[in-house]
Length: 115
Image (tube, rainbow, N blue to C red; front, top):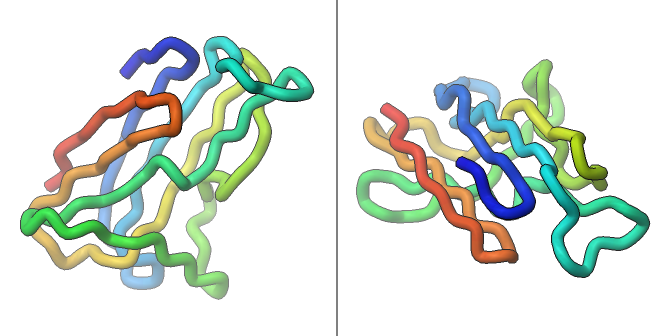
């Protein structure tokens, strides 16, 4: 999805015994949004949610003893032209149909169906 200041995509969504449900995502800063400081903006796990078929939200879970080898940053600063990418862990992989939901503070919103 392309928004005014970011491009956002989900490349993969899969279950993991150690981490629960893993979503491989990529967010790139195409331009700095209003209110950015030091020529950077924050990218984090905050906009990401996984919804089960029942509509209930699944919270993030991070098991420090078995982190994914390619972890999405929990929170970091990025300049225009830079990207954050990697796996975001969630607490549940048991629902057969999940929706990956992205909703940031600027009002950008996108959803991806994962099976």
